[in-house]
Image (spheres, rainbow, N blue to C red):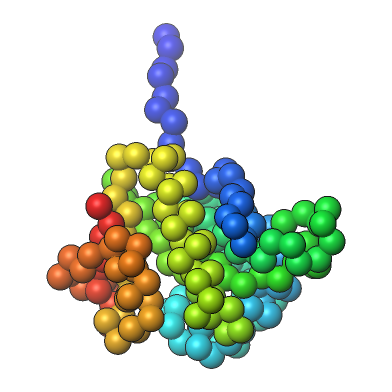
Length: 184
């Protein structure tokens, strides 16, 4: 007897991307120190409810390791052209400016979230990285809805999500104080 198995959706093998200014790829174990440096910032840990403060090297390693299960993938956004020309994405010679998280939520939903380091904020990196990831997710999972959660008081992130085509659903998010936004 033969059993036909449906391929299970997974984020564990998302390909890397290049944008005009960024190299974007799944964070790897060797990226843990760069992730720790970027994320151990009160502005980030206060805004992202699952990030502990202080954000330690062990926390960075655990976050990266969480992507191996396939339900979550954290992608680093690295400035292109920093470090040596032949340096692989994520190596010590490149500057990590942000992280985009992707999360499978049930059979028809993908959630995205992101954070950008202090010196890189306000320079368009979040828009560049998140829009590239959205395009990738829409191509890879065409039947899924893409959602995000945001505090309405987080004016910068709320505005960015609206610019990316997200609209407030009027529903509370799963995380305290957040609203659910949906991109059609």
